Length: 477
Image 1: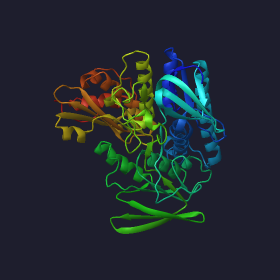
Image 2: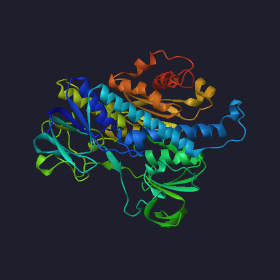
Image 3: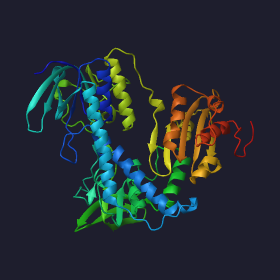
Image 4: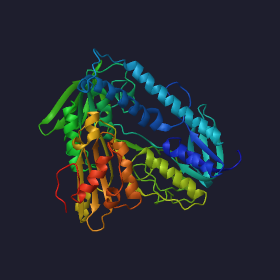
């Protein structure tokens, strides 16, 4: 038994490592438990996001988008590049280098903040004891006043399509192929499926996405979702809705995928199969029964608005609790919990949670959709502005998509923003800030935006809600 800690965080992904750093900043004696072993068989911080999720996928999305632009867009800009070639192993190596630099950076931050990294698998025991099982099988117990559970999530596996080598893979496996497959099937046309599908389609693979639901991106504003499906289809992604996979069979270096659609039983033979049907909380065996924490049948830990469990001194943040599985959500929950442990009155506005799909065009949103407001009986007005009318978008040669901002018709408060187009993920921040500060459409309309910039589209969309947009034809109200 070592000296007692003020805080032990279990998990060093975006929720866990941020919680640990903030706790240490506040003067709390802090340890963080992490078992991750990277591709080089070395312990690593950062969890799924930095090692095999957010960061590596964005690195490949960036590389492949530039390759696609060089193939199909540079000529329109007056740039002749000649014959192109792609070096996929070098792309993968660049991705791995970025991951290594970032995970190493977290280790340096741990040292700078005097956080103890307990290498191994953590388990919460009674009386706020944390047992850590090291790689050699040895167990050590640590005492603490507070436990923050931040173990994250893992891909959902389908029993009917078992993973097999590098032929049938989950989202992590699809980031390491060093040869371009001829044909890929992706099970699931959600965020992960679309991003991975985009990577390999840009490199030349034929990509088919099978989505069991009959609606495309149901969590997204319908107008934005329609535009997104149109754009992705134009890029060559074959998105099939109401297509339920019933099984798969690997034969040599090929895999047969069986599914049902509106026309009955179907099958296709592909080179690779990606299972991207979502993620589930990683909590199995994490908490001893005698601790008494509330965990539902999906493994999700019950918490209140401040991420407190029903057991005093035990908290849970990130993918293991309710709400969307987003890295930034987990990070901000980690900050909130660390500050509350330190006696601060910290809270989090879940109504201002940004969401992004990092395809091209990017899709981003925050707040309520038109469909949600209609269902709730809220009187609203929406203002839109197309990037086709943006001078900066025209100069960039990237004019697809639009900005939509929704306001309460009676109070003028911003209720939501929905974007598809260039730099949508970056432009969204303005609307997140508007929701956080209860801003009105008039506040945005009176804010001077630099010209020429993409952000002017936000300004014009705000003006459009009141019929005052300058660069599109609308009727002044």
